[in-house]
Length: 385
Ligand SMILES: Nc1ncnc2c1ncn2[C@@H]1O[C@H](COP(=O)(O)OP(=O)(O)O)[C@@H](O)[C@H]1O
Ligand SMILES: [Mg+2]
Image 1: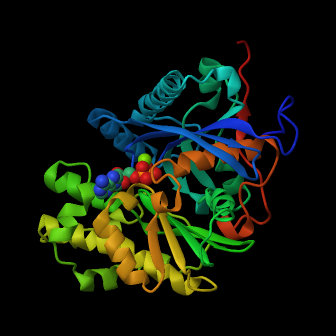
Image 2 (image 1 turned 135 degrees about the vertical axis):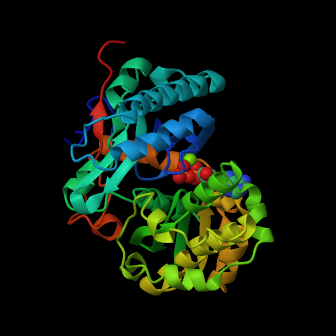
């Protein structure tokens, strides 16, 4: 059931402190961010933190995704899924406790936590999206109200359930001096874009982000990522492979559209088996850039400015490829815009938690394809504190 406005929440227009927690499809760790917001404008950014998953924890999360592949009941937790759910709960609780202590913030001063959880299955066409993470347990442990399960209401109503950061992006862009239209591009495991031209907001997943690069590097070298895009920078892009991959029907779909992390794994298949590590990394990095370039034709106008967040913004090879493919538009990292590269999604879920408490929409027909602007999230109130 969607959250009801929280009794006791300060009146409309009053800013509150909210913490957002994001564990994205890269499965690299938990981002934590505090913001001060009324659910419309952002009064202030607070501190941020990161709690990485260790190697064994990442392996467990991968097993959980495999275990979730065929579930039809979103509450089912077969095999590794149950163990991974416990890990997600503990990692998030510890991340918040450490964050509060490190920054001298009292739990009582935090109005709400937006807890995204870890996506293990995203099949909006089957009206199914599953994020593990128990908001009730988190609220009870931390003595702070928690809004969780953000995507379910949108998917149940026929939306894609993703991306959900666009309304936060719009609030950020409204304070920014950039030539419109502006595109906010988040390159996580999957990449997603928000197109903003005044009040017009259009959003969708564009294709793979870092996940294919990470998986390829792990399989070939045992490393979890292509640090600073060094491998990709040394390789040669297989342009024929890119052209072939871009024929995948996903790229021809108009927004809104979204992806499961592993949608492209089988599709890339064995194409790179004979490629060297550097050429494979270069080609997968170029696929991410090319699929982002591909979205431009499906937007009302070509964005003049691209602001890039997520781990992909830390990859200079990807940033160079994006600048080349999106020319003459300006491509900059979120840091250059005065935002956070790493914590932007976590901040978005803090913002969405406050919107959820106030019954405001989290998604629009143009961001997720939901039939009407829709609120979402489930509220867990701590019982005894
Ligand atoms: N210095 C870097 N060089 C290259 N890639 C990086 C770097 N830092 C982060 N990344 C990439 O970003 C990913 C994490 O991005 P993130 O925005 O947290 O994604 P998600 O939201 O899916 O968790 C890593 O798995 C890695 O692929
Ligand atoms: Mg991450």
